[in-house]
Length: 262
Image (cartoon, rainbow, N blue to C red; front, side):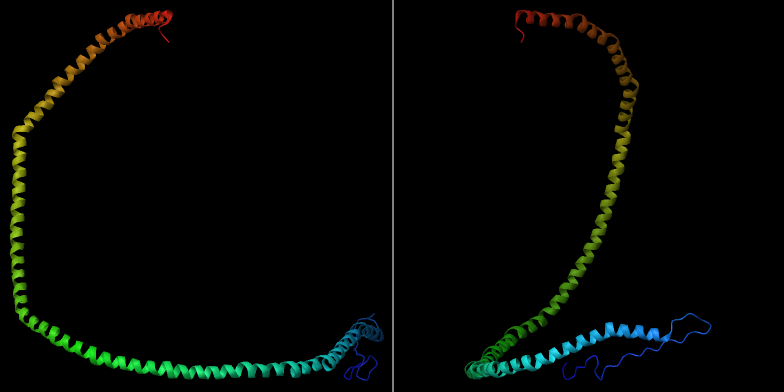
């Protein structure tokens, strides 16, 4: 076995000692203690010892692989592959990139950023001096001052106009109320006049026409309809059955016999 491994009969291996349970008072027929010890030793020999042997074997193989295979391969790769590759990357890639970044930063700061800052400051000064200040002065003296004087002049006119509009509105409201009252009275008077005209002229005629319709026209119409149903309708039906239908049938048969009817 390895340096840290122990065999079955090694000095570190000790057989498990199982204390046999003491028999309870008053119970008889329990197995003797030597038999339990033998069973426990057999279980340890069959289960525990093989597992311990497999574990020791795995540990020994792992140590051997780490010492004679993995560690040498790792040292070889670190010395002959990773370190040279890192050195090449640092010399050929990282250092040029650092110098290139510094050069580009200096060029950007010198050729772009500083001129842009000075240009922005100059444009801001020009806008403030040449554009903003004159525009502010012109807006104040040409727009704000005239508007303020115009407001002072027009304020009395505005108040007078508002007062006039209020007075006109009140007068129109009063006139509107009077006109609405007059229109309402005229509408009521016209309604009453029309009702009296209807009551004195049209209503008697309408009532008479209704009475005449109910008591004269409708009974006469009903009598005429009853006489028509009693005399004319039976005669017409008899003529149709006795004369018209036989003549039409004979005519149809004659035309059929002559071949003139399809």
